[in-house]
Amino acid sequence: MVDIDSRLRTARGIAKTETEASIEVFQTLKRRGHPDAPPPTVSDGWGGIDDAMVEVYGVIPEYKGVGRPPTLKRPQPGWQYLQVVKQRENGRVVSIKLRVIFGDKDEVLELLGKSTAYVERTHLTMRLFNGRLTRKTLAFSKQLKMYRASAAWEDLVYNFARPLETLRVEVFDDPKRRWQPRTRAHLTVGGGRKGEQIIEPSIDPIQA
Image 1 (cartoon, rainbow, N blue to C red):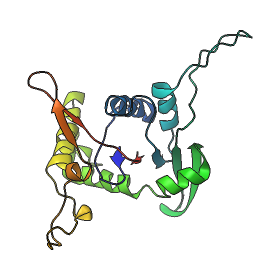
Image 2 (cartoon, rainbow, N blue to C red):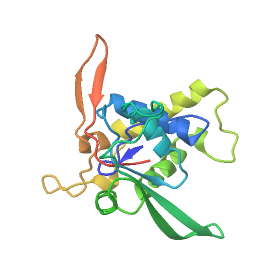
Image 3 (cartoon, one colour):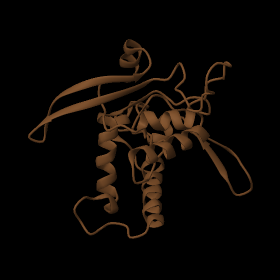
């Protein structure tokens, strides 16, 4: 997942299905500043993210004494989730269809926009900088732990070392000054147990 404003990679999920990976992502976000509800989210139309939201943040309704007690988690008021479904012909995108899953349609569209360009750009950057993600090559990971390690290392370099040209701002009349994602997202470092650091980003709407 990537923050829309700062391009910060806020969480990642590695699993066999979209739903399992999304559950891992939202569990991470739940520990990183969103304990009660998922942040406003926009994604493509593959699905699985709405199920993950319910699994991680959903609440089983209170039993009212009539019929069978509820056992399934339900989405909660205030959630905002938009899917951008792409229509393709001959491998090219010819149109998009917006599907509001959670939240008021007008509010969701105004907040999240109508594109997934930022996360798609991030996916391309990941494939360029991490050879294990390149398609149709032999540069794949034979062990899951090595794949997770390479993804974690690439995220570390992206978030804390690599400057983003798209986020450059004019500072002291120097138009070439560039901010890194960690600076743009106002990351704060606090104390943890001995030898640990707790890094908490202030996360705005995100793309998945």
